[in-house]
Picture 1 (cartoon, rainbow, N blue to C red):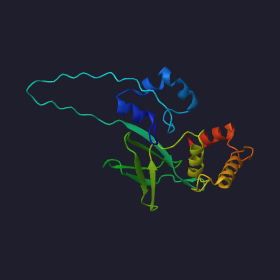
Picture 2 (spheres, one colour):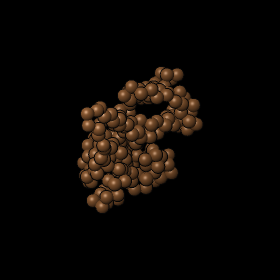
Picture 3 (cartoon, one colour):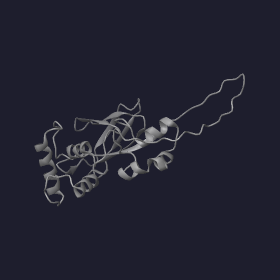
Length: 203
């Protein structure tokens, strides 16, 4: 696994169904250690079974046309300022292979997007606010990994982007998150804290 890989994109690239990969006995240990099939970590080893080839009939001496459609995956991104959702805000999505995607956030400030699974990154633009956000699709590590916990704390506003070695900033961010979620403020990423972080973030 490399950064940016997720189950749906791997399955599509190999011509195999998602469930055929994730439910294969060879992936049982990984499945147990990951809360979501689409939140994997660089270095994870995923067994991919061989695809069964699809057979087509061709007419000799004539042109044969085949069309393939790239499947999509659904992304949900919530936007807020100091806990106040950006409800009913118009946005547009840029950088998705020339596709025109526009919409409005729901009452909770959530933008729901259907994008091709081979889309590596995209921009969500809020023209009325003059704001632009860049997202790397599939790059979020599991919450159980230090990098995954750090990213979630940053996205939720508890931690500014800092060097990974800045332990004091991380400790403060964890304590602040714990205090805001009625947990014992220890600064340690306990199992209870990680569960609350995943629940608050949505994954």
